[in-house]
Length: 389
Picture (cartoon, rainbow, N blue to C red):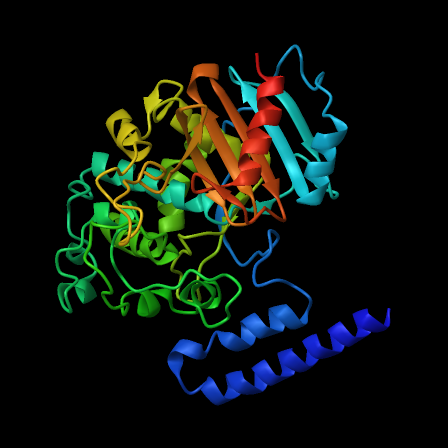
């Protein structure tokens, strides 16, 4: 108990020091978000939570489509080892769907089928889907179109030729720090930033574009800002009209925006496991929902194909096999499966040969990586394979 009190004391002192430091820095525009971030920490929150909720609404479908239940619904019993693993990483939802029917679903930590949770970077894949739609509508010519056609700030400082494809594949070469536990990093600033447009359009070039994969939430945010200009309406409204209402969503969802109404495209779509699963089903069905082709099939195939013309780093002559257009690719038994992925273990795995979807939501994930994926995603996939036919 004394040790715990000592840790709490030092944590409080650290927060106070950081808060004072933030007041010193408050004259510098790029640090004005710091006080909010520090107050989050002081309240006992981590930098981000699966329950955060400043938002704009995505409205449920007027013709909501309930998932059917499989004849073997919830007959599978998770093993003691599975349950221990689920508890260790604070899973809140685990859902397995096959042939459009729920075979297994379970919730923990007072969550239920309607509980909303933060998608974190699973939202990046939704931005990709929306770009595919905008291309089909002619609002964006193709993935080779220049970002500067929509964001004039990109017509200078070496950013003139950056394309949608450079950002879709996380190879823009823009300077960006993706450090979630560093309050001075670009990604933490973006999470609390009041003017994302100003932050993102001022990023400098750090490396040649289209050469090396570097995971960057900044790349996705720029895609969102450019897409909003292309469609000439708030991005949340566009996604609401073109995707959310069309996939039979049963509940309203929420998406973070900054104080100026710019959507936080790199993260922060709030929904429940069953409605999230509809997004995965849209990909599983190659962009088609019922009789409507919502996202072009050709775009879906590109989006879930590896960007293997890129290297994984500047130091390695190793091609990218694990990433497409804002979609991760999970290598499992020599097959690659498209995935939506979020920082705290938000996973959706698409298994075409089984006509299946796996959804896992939670508070934590392991830091151990295997083939560029968190090790625990393989554990959830193994759990699911025991349930699937």
